[in-house]
Image (cartoon, rainbow, N blue to C red; front, side, top):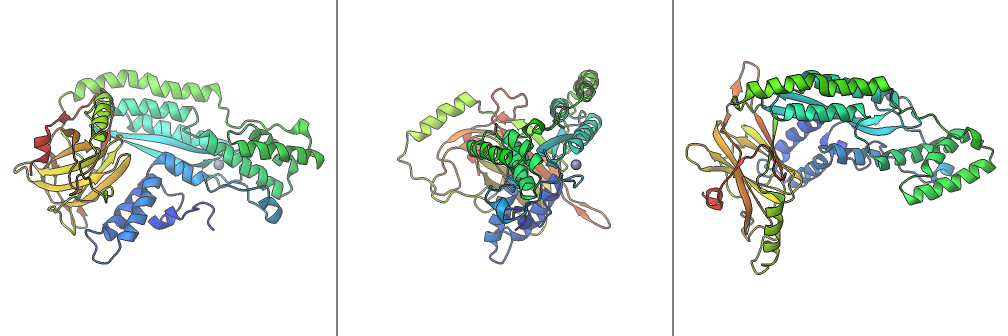
Length: 441
Ligand SMILES: [Zn+2]
């Protein structure tokens, strides 16, 4: 059993559990291309689904955090049977008594493209402070230069990094309790006692109860309650916090103004492997009301076999061997259909489905000029290719030019990446289009 990959998700993608977000993404793209049911001859759709399921968890920093820290579960019973290793820091490799699972963010921007990359893992306090500072400094130099999200994300990332990164109390407490048992199994009763003191106040009631029991047993066995408190290594100095505040607000105040002024009107889209963020047009209130409408009309027969994210709806005009990729992350609360249309003829080159809160990707888009449209809905009709009723449709601004570059040694294709967010009054609104414009063939 691998302690760092309890369900074999990393193994499914063929990467180490220490892989970076980019390594995971590129492993997924390669494997998805090889095993996608539409492009692969042999019966590999099972494998494709396993890869997609693994990617769905590992591509989301918070779900990945939950998965990684779920590896550390033990019961007091187990400590009698075997010796448990205390948790080690993923950076320095040292055993650490009070680890945390932390996600730091680095922001990279280029004109209209802004990406936010997570750096995550189990950290000891000292490695975490170094990584927080490093991610913030990288963000300070690379994050601001994109409109409009560069400055917004950069401030958010630097502040989050400065306050210790993103971490979940429940995951931290789970690891502290695991360590209390690990040190118990190794005979270090005093350290086990100090950690159990912290676990006594855990959110998980079972852990709190077991910790209280363990403390009583350890006191009987000779642990000294007066030495029961550990120093908190996670406390940061004033200087550390002040440095991050300075990075977040001093430079950007001056720069942001300049960037906004100078990029007004230069919205040329050079979508090159970057991701752009757009707010989806249906506001949360109108969305709510149309959900209710749809629920009260149950007579219409609907699709029984709902497509997976990235599944093509109907015949497309995609290449099976090469071409560009389009990735849509649907952060809204409704399922979406995405259509890629040739700019000149308006013909649908590909239509695909993306479930709510999932990511769907297609590949094989030939060179050309395209517009990307989307629509939200509640239920698909019996054809499983269109919604019974549209809750809203829209089109991303501008035309995408996809052009394969061929050099002496490689062929470079593009990956377009968009995010749909149901943000009421979002500030970059793709324009909405009519249902007829969306349904047009
Ligand atoms: Zn470390």
